[in-house]
Image (cartoon, rainbow, N blue to C red; front, side):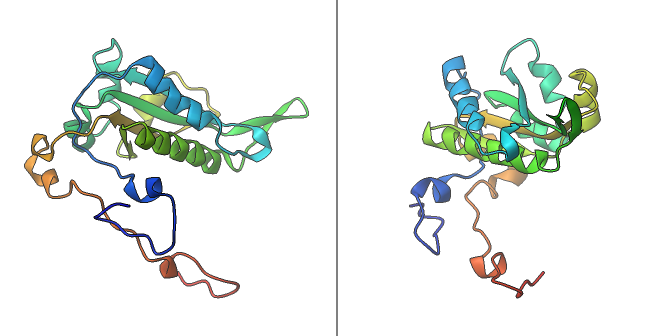
Length: 195
């Protein structure tokens, strides 16, 4: 288990040890490694097995890298420029039913499960991930020429963990695993929900 974090109940170490660093080395990621992360995401649960998630990526130094960096707000670009890959997470908002496209109410929920699977596989493989919603969704939609029935959920930075001294000074103090709310604040039995 992580020295900085502690679980209230027994869980596999990967759940406590995984966190989202910002300091990354820029080390190259090969296709075999990157696609093993996508493979983990592929097996995530989804309603009616629709699998609404889609991933679009650029590797550091590729021809599309600069365009993907422009998808990020200035704050995220300041550190994510050292990622090995940037992955745009998309979800298809519709699914085919009786030969017609109908709304899929669980598209974001299911895509979140796929992202979690990707993040856990990365952790098990010695890589780190950091999900970001500080992004320019309309720019992503325009550049990737997304159909109307796709939504931009987030962008993931993937890389090898770097030394925190490589970060802008204001971020160095934040570069450590954070805690979580106690279960008593997030889990409620029966009719006892508290906001």
